[in-house]
Length: 71
Image (tube, rainbow, N blue to C red; front, side, top):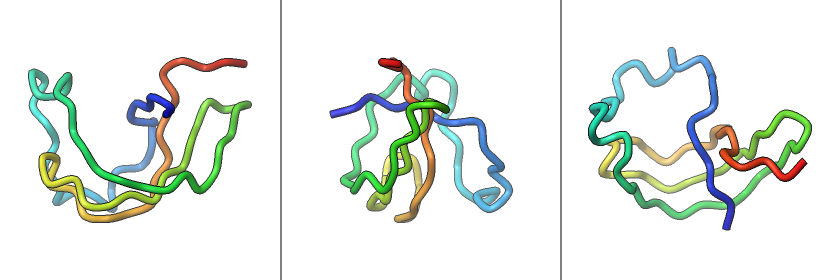
């Protein structure tokens, strides 16, 4: 299982979605998903994931930056 962090991205499409408070940013949030692509050269993985209720996120496909790059 790869660890991912939020990638720098245009969040305009998600402007109505609540963002976690800084204290909650270190919290663990759970959802299930499918890896759609891996880009080692940019350190990104794209996931199609289910709704993440604790983040108030709907199901979606989005890129995440990988925290620990192997290459």
